[in-house]
Length: 66
Image 1 (tube, rainbow, N blue to C red):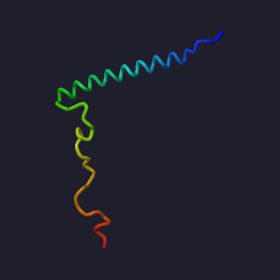
Image 2 (cartoon, rainbow, N blue to C red):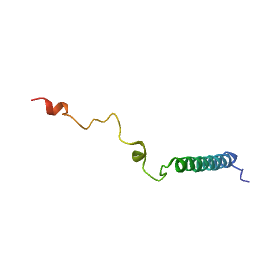
Image 3 (cartoon, rainbow, N blue to C red):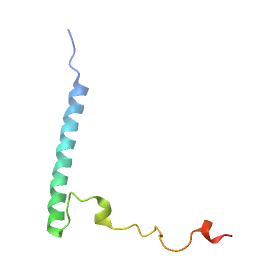
Image 4 (spheres, rainbow, N blue to C red):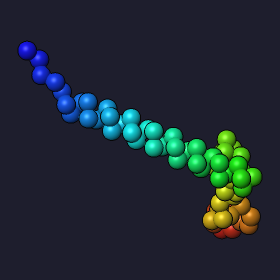
């Protein structure tokens, strides 16, 4: 007679709980963004803005050397 695989059932139950928790957090996060006027579907780059460490002006090291 086959034995019940309790580890598999436990893992599936844990995954289901984790997924439910994540969905709940996303819903809460979406409400906060809507209240702040941020589009939750917008890419993160638009929300954060440009990276302050990236320098786009001025000569690079290769350009300044003769």
